Image (cartoon, rainbow, N blue to C red; front, side, top):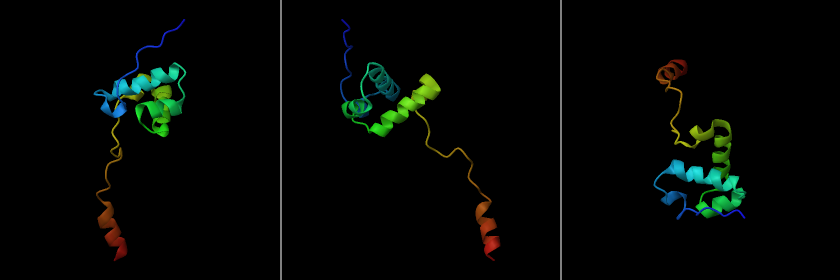
Length: 88
């Protein structure tokens, strides 16, 4: 007989460590939980759960870390003067 490990208390947003909360998503999915059940249990959207699972599948544990949503490309500082020159 397989016993289930203790479930975390609270939802995703009350967890102090987001990495551990995302790891919990992976563990629940590995135990056979459906994505919709995980999303309802942790109070996150189903697309978010799917995104974390996809990131884990491609990047493994590194995919569970926080990622910056800032643009990766540098700002185009010369764009406005060029547009003004073309306009005139």
